[in-house]
Length: 341
Image (spheres, rainbow, N blue to C red):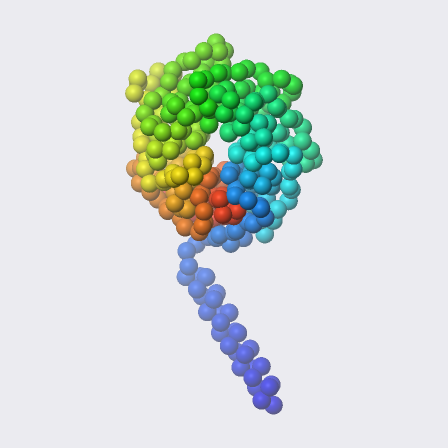
């Protein structure tokens, strides 16, 4: 009899706890995204994760790691790993998606760029003309066949997935660590260890203008959603926003953001814009995820959780979700307040 009574008490206790948990949920902050939980942790990489990028639809997340593997994850549901692409012989340093999301590209320390068909899982292209580490890859916005890559061989190259050889080569004096393309794909932005951003006119294959202001190696370049502004992250622990419109004033640096830091690891920490251009984010070696308001320049979020350098943070293209990857081998997906707030 005592056993039956005890089970009854446990049942009563469980009912009370369930009601209390539901009440706590009701009183908690309102959910803002379709994630299964406010924070999802993705594990599986065997070494530090250097780059991540949401697909254009927001349904998939690509991550590239020092373990030489590119993973694809479902963003929704249990956020399970749905594909592993193997082929690189060195660390993957950056990943990006083609405009329409059918291809995923990876830049590697093995001196190559690989292009993957997401639907079939097949490698569709291998570009191997660089002679040193490929630090950065950027897919074009206008022509989904085009992509750019920046390398320690002091060159930035343009590629077309329909062509075997590179289309154009832009040579610099120093190692190149970041690249980006303008909204119409006609301007190529490159940067490296000389702390200067060079803007190339692809039609004339000549320098259009340069952007100076950083005092240490530039690690990331990202064009704003509307194509008017370029964001740069550098080892001087600052982010800068530059006006890259054709008739902008001579002093094109319009905003400087501080808070995130670089350290002795010298990782190529990447920055990204929110879909509406009102927020920016970047990785940081102090293990935090930083999100700023672009108008006020105030830090909106300083998010903990990682136990290693945060190497890249990206905004989901449809919902208020940020993804972050770290040298601790982990990837987090977390919801934030709605962009319109």
